[in-house]
Length: 385
Length: 135
Image 1 (cartoon, each protein chain N blue to C red):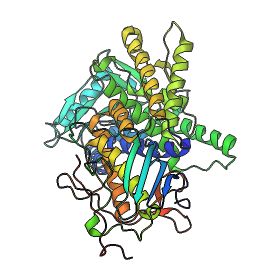
Image 2: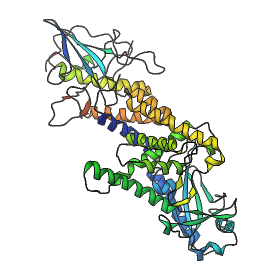
Image 3: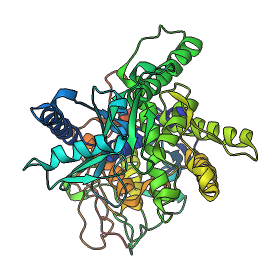
Image 4: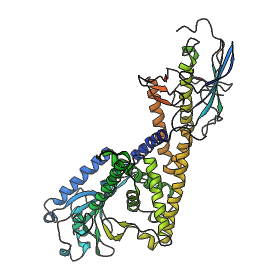
């Protein structure tokens, strides 16, 4: 049956569910504090007297940890957390970039605490903490550039290629935040005519959308090799680019998917190119060249997600919506948020806080001024047929 | 009824019986249900969902909180939760909304979150006795 209610009320309720899905996917506040504690400790350790002391290493979070868009990897219990370790060194001081990585690895291996947790990767040192998460530490040296947020630009070792790679994780995070903020300001000025006051809430919508995109990618493309799925930084960049500043996550998902589809169409026979906003020379989507099939995978995924999203927006019946959310984000998480919502409603009912709205039959909170019929105490009875 | 729930229209009115029909959308994301409330003097009201047809949750054999004759089972008669001194608009209609909410929740997750007493097929309570019905 088509819903007859105002779209705003439907959107508000759907956004509540989406918000809770996002909350369940992200690194919990406890885990976040723990991660912070741990990388601060690592930083102190690296700075302490020893081989790296004179380079004054400083650790800070990057990627989804920094931006606030962490999503638990599907099928695993561990988060991947990304950190930068900045060394005050001239890259030219190192005969080859791999040496920096080796020095960091050796420093960790020299410690009773860390030696068993250390794992060397192509660009980073991974520290494995059992059960919670692992932290990937990217060693970097400052190399300011004349580009957006270029004062934070760095070079990082690429061991496979044995060269330095340009990067700017801090700059990227600043770009993400300022792009979102500008979208919100723009919307407020033009539509609401309000002064552009920055609210913590303002970035929350875009962050939720990024989480939902990443999660749907993980669910829908579960059977596809991870290296063929669109990478998170590409999705994050596209989302921030096409975000229009609204506070409704359900609307923002559609706007962003439409933005992506438009860009794909405009790219025509050539593929869409997603460059790093802080480094025009860096093509974040370069994998699509080496593996053109993976571009197809990306395009099909966006197309499918968009059409499913439109369907979801028009659906009614909590059970039908749950089925769609399950399909898009996973069975357990969809079931959990509905169960929680139902428990909430029942608790409010038993506390005497519910009424039924005149004319529609909608459940609403009781207010002193309304003339809505209160929901009285009852006990559902009967065992069915 | 008109005051609280104007969407319910009287479709039958005799000295001994009233029937109301109307649409209820329990939550902003819910379906809209057409409900019939039949009240015969001296009996408990009977509530039916006319459309859409009630369906079963995955793995369930029967609907929860339903009388054998398929009317919704909204309250525990022995607890005196409803009697003719209480307006149907006041008491019964909000319970219909709650029933539908929990019904959709049950369809979604196979759990009925509205609580209640469940012990085999219930018999629809007989005519009211003199001891019931003083508020």
